[in-house]
Length: 183
Image 1: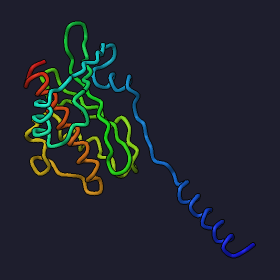
Image 2 (image 1 turned 180 degrees about the vertical axis):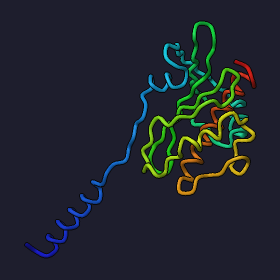
Image 3 (image 1 turned 135 degrees about the horizontal axis):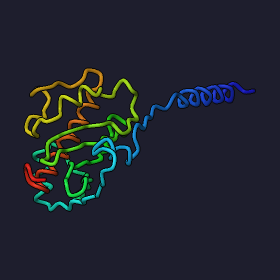
Image 4 (image 1 turned 30 degrees about the vertical axis):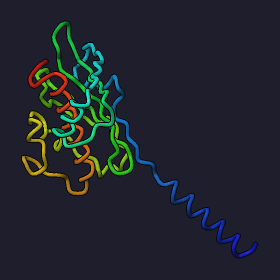
């Protein structure tokens, strides 16, 4: 076998081994399971699309400190009978090179009530722990900034930045679409 062919086969084998490393992709909850986490068992969940004007998009991007992908956004409203339990948004974004999907839940008054990781495709060590997400809860949009009352996570800076941007975006959209403190 000629030397160049032998090297080509070895190189192909090395590339195959390198690319066949363990794929890291964890899906924790389905959409229905996410809604149960958000609103409890037996709640009805209704999608509520929000169509934002250019003026609203500009205001949201300014308040959230991040760009919107689209002027169309969907909240999911959880109800039990006529009582509104809260609002949920499913937010997907790229962390480093792979996607993460979060469930961001707001109280009926529009306060940050829960954040759950639904799927995380980066290495597990880059995922912020639940206790990090817990420190964001109940804080108003204006206080959701690093250095205000919490820090980024060493080794998971991109993940914590992406999660914080999602929380800020959901809060800003809710505020503009429904008004502050309005169910």
